[in-house]
Image 1 (cartoon, each protein chain N blue to C red):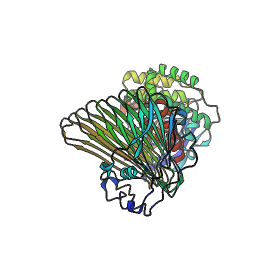
Image 2 (cartoon, rainbow over the protein chains, first blue to last red):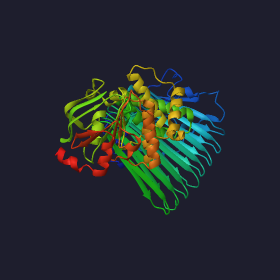
Image 3 (tube, rainbow over the protein chains, first blue to last red):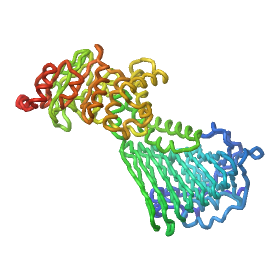
Image 4 (tube, rainbow over the protein chains, first blue to last red):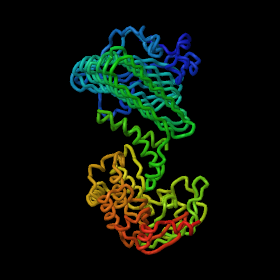
Length: 388
Length: 249
């Protein structure tokens, strides 16, 4: 199975550039000017670990784009893992150039499929990059069966440098299935990391997602979701915490296709130094998707003069009797609150950390899985402490 | 205790305090009264070290230590407490968490051991009950969605828990109905002690019927233009500040 490819000469012209409206703040064509060989296949098994290790979930490791470890004979109840003919990816070409590359370069016609069955199964999927100036692609299918109340813990763990990591997930929720997906991205500062998820919901399904982005040279987490309405519910949350020259781009597109759909989105970001945060959120309510209830919030704190936030919330409504709202704020830490805390005896640096953590905490509190919520809370505290 | 000598301060180059002097001995309660724009709130912010206020002359010492050289949190750890005229909302931080963080930060700064959770909760429960604050409210984000009266009671609760040496009450009566005023005043009176000095800043005499001061000072044009006993507050209430305007000019 050595069909995996890096970035070929002919791929370079396919990379999304700033001329593409959806990629204007994450220009990959301008950044990646040379072909990159495919990342090496690791000779060793990646040690059990990652940010969610303490939660003891079944662990699936994809290292440098290749399946590195999975509990072959020892899967917990409700989980299945198998190879299957990959879905046709030609639909991806126009809209999702990086997803198309992942589908064509990940290697082999068979895709890895992780299936959540009845009960409350939890799986940990780790995308590990240990690469220097190479590229790798991965593709994973996720199926959540009717009646399952599943949790997908997903981590991106980078080591080395100057790599390009490109992941495509295709997530299918059957009628009545529930999935909470928590994505934590810890890439190295010089890495380029793109993760695209296409999510397909059946009626009465519930999908909740929290993305936590630590940034990289370029880090793009895109979620495309087809919303059938009909009692299905969606929560799409995000946090980006960026320092130095890191960039992160959280992009979501939710397309409401049927009546009575609900979407609730909240993203918060904190940027300092020369970091750059990007939020693009689009909610499309198609003709006939009446009585859609959609709300989207994006709020960012800019803690230094040279940091930047680019936000583009969009609502496109072509249906009737629709409740849509969006709020978008970008600003500095509230100086009055800061002084109030200092006046009570809390030193300035601690007061700043407390207020920023509280700002982000609103998103963290919405994570349903208790163990994951505490992991995320600690990750946020660690990041913000480091930003001083 | 608190000694303010010839203090001058500006905001954006505009002089607000203009040679203000005041001695507040340990154990006493002094009131500062004055018309709008006299510099009352500026005084409270200069004493606590808020950004944007530039001290252009004079000195402030607390027990002999130069207060103006210290950061706001260091002043707090030395025992300076301000009950804000408009308490700030702190979204996402429960009142209990905020208060415990503040108390322990002060303890650390003074080299004292941190207070354990059970002892802290006991202390807060007692003080909250005395101020008729529903304990459940302390689990909510501090001041977020609180009424004006609730915010002011929360200020006094924080004061009771932090037990300052110098308490500055800035227009604590504003926005309070008569029942809330009485509760707040009782809270302040309960804290009168030989080790604590209190500066009550107010526009009206009403609060001083409940918190009877040892001395009353009239602040006009950025300095103290008259001082007297509690009866001075009643005189101001009857006659207004007009006669002092000429003195200040």
